Structure formats: C-alpha cells, structure tokens
Image (cartoon, rainbow, N blue to C red; front, side):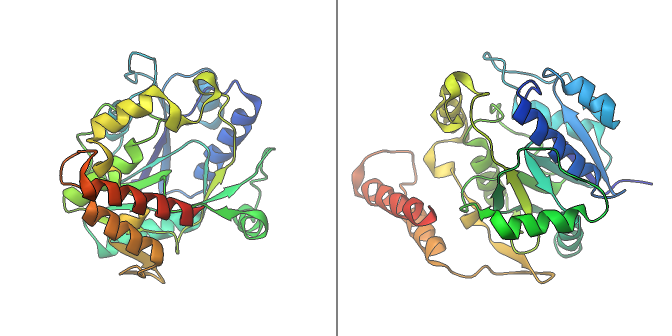
Amino acid sequence: MPKLITLFSAPKPFTNPHINVIQRNAIQSWLHLGDQVEVFLVGDEEGLAEVAREYGIVQLAQVERNDQGTPLVSSIFELARQASQAPLMVYANADILLLPDFVRAAQTILRQCQRFLAIGQRWDLVVKKPLDFSEGWDQRLRAEVKHRGRLHPPAGSDVFLFPRSEFQEIPDFAVGRAGWDNWMIFHACQQGVTVVDITPSATMIHQDHDYSHLPGGKPHYDLEESERNLSLAGGMRSMYYILDSQVQLKDGHLQSPPLTFLRLLRKIELWLMPPEERRRGWRWWIARRFRRARRFRMR
C-alpha cells in the first residue's frame, strides 16, 4: 500500500543516555502513527544503525557534512526525497513526539491546499524515561502535556510538513544549528507557498534536554555554525517565524489566524526592517526594539 507521508530525521549520536532515551521515544511515536507513514533515519551517527535495525527502519547513511562534520540539511532532504515515493514529506527533529492528530492534520491540509508548508508551536515536556507505547499511548501523552507541559513561544520550528515537490534546493545549512528553520518559512513565503500554522490541530511534543551534546555545551544559537547558517539564509531579514504564517488549521479548516499582539509586533517589525541587510539607520534601530519587545512578550 503506497504511503502518504515519509517522515525523516537526522538523529544525534545515541551515546548520551538521556538523548538515547528521548530519541527512541520520538522514533517509536512516529512508528505508531499508522500504516500511511514510513520513517527514514538519515546519517551514520554512533548507535543509529543499531537503532534502525532494531525498529526495522530504513537508514540513509551517506549524508554530506560540512567541515566540522555536521550533516547538511540540503543532503538530508535530498536523500529522503530520492528514497521516497510518498506525496508528503515531514522533517522532524529527533526529540519530537508526534501523535495521530498530526496525520489527520496533514490529510486535511492536503484536501484544501496544493502548495504548503505546515509548521506549529511545540509543547515542552520533561521526559526522563522510556515511554509506554501500548494501547492508549497518545491519550496518556496528551494528558501529561495538559498536566505539566509548556507551550513553547512561536519562535523556532521543529517539524516541517510539505509536498514532496517543494524545497528541492536548500542552502548547505548545518542541521541542529540556528537559522535554517527560519529560512524554511521565509523561502516558502517568497515562493508563494502557503505557510500553515497547525498549532490548534496537532500536538507536537519536545522532550527537554540540555546542550551537552554540542561543542562546549553551548546552546546551538551561540555556535559559529549558526552564524554561518544565518549568512547562508541571507541575514536577519530571512529569519521568519510561526508568527509569519498566513493561515491556521483550526476545526478542520484553513482560516486567517487571529491578529494577536505578538503578530502585530511582528508585522510592524517586518515593515520597519530595511530592504537590505544594513545594520544601521533609523528603520533598523526601531526594528531592533520591536524585536526585543516581541521576544520579551514570548517568554
């Protein structure tokens, strides 16, 4: 039976005990999304081949890397596209739990829109042990999120859903570093692709972790590779967010998102941003203050 969705990810090494647990949790949640979803794991990080064999998942090992050994987003996406026959592709970070409502959201969007990029806010949740994926697993997770989860601000994106024909040319971003997720939204807007916020219709759960797996234990946005990603993306003007989505999937329909205070701040910030990446002048000065105000409100 042909698959509807190819879900692919590029996990970190499975050597850190906590990363090992949350990545296995994420992978198992994807495998429990139903027969319409296939899963590919991209890369050859330590422990990945063993996990792929254990769960019967296709491994795409021949990923291209930058000079620091970090897999390239362009190669990850191309390897998955070449191996897939599904009409829809999903890239998910390897610490993200997805529930069956995600597949229902994908089906709904596909019936209403031809060219789209679906993104959404995640729920942050502390998970320290293997999850139970017996019957009712999704209801139990949803209850946990309701009880002790935290809705993440509409900033970084962890899951991208799009038709297989989109995003065939991507700069050589370093995966797991800042900036490339923002460029995905910017590029979609520039190409006339409808950006859909699926937050009201799909629960995406991020399992909290530290940054000990990164160089120096620094958050990814403090790394040189993130600065390189920003440059490849075209600078700060290309840093788009969930707030830049044109429509929202709610109650089974694509509709205009409500004009919240954060969305209004973001619209003003974009209007003030100089057309070129010039970090000077009155427009840049005011835009920076709107950005700070927006970030403060998102905390």
